[in-house]
Length: 270
Image 1 (cartoon, rainbow, N blue to C red):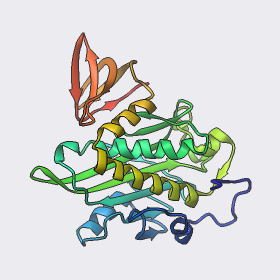
Image 2: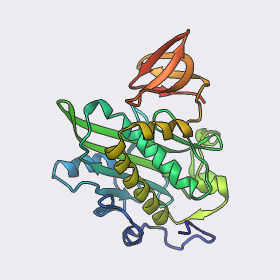
Image 3: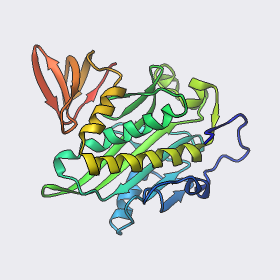
Image 4: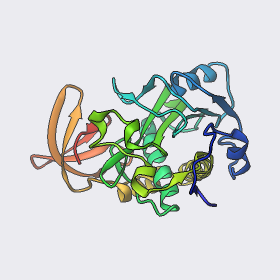
């Protein structure tokens, strides 16, 4: 499946029928909620979950005005140039594995891009990098009842066709897009369909084989394995060697000779 065009389309709005025509999924993306403009696809996803929307529903927009990242961070996306979407899930997964979903989403996107000869890497727990610059982010949120996950929303922002002028000046040194890094203009619908197909396969793998294959794949894409990193956890910033992930997807750092595990937090430098 050809995932790029040499010439930009005169009209850049997403076509949902083109997404669904290229789906090979059981249920992921079979229902699409498209909005030309919206504040946050994750927020809309939770609203739809409260109305019992179908498992695997895709919420997508051409313009997200108030995208959210982890913590208090925001996600800036360019209208009609990026992919900004969320997926609703009702997984039969124990609560202790809630942290596996951002890892699964990151692995899925890297696998999709690798088919396009684009070799992206991951920063724990939710950033996507290409040639040392951030091209995407993931925000997965869970609602838990007892020991089980009741619902998950996986939100993704991926910079696709942006040019340098689409980014604020303070992000020029650290952020990029597929187009900027490869010189190609991409058809977003086909990239998204491929992501959804791989996402569906990753979920099946999680159901059939548990989290370890996903963790192994994530480690293979890690941009900072066995490197000393700065790590931000709550109000604390520490340094340590990032040596891997636990069986539940926690970050493992070697700090002053002692292994420490983190369920939350962010690797600040790679």
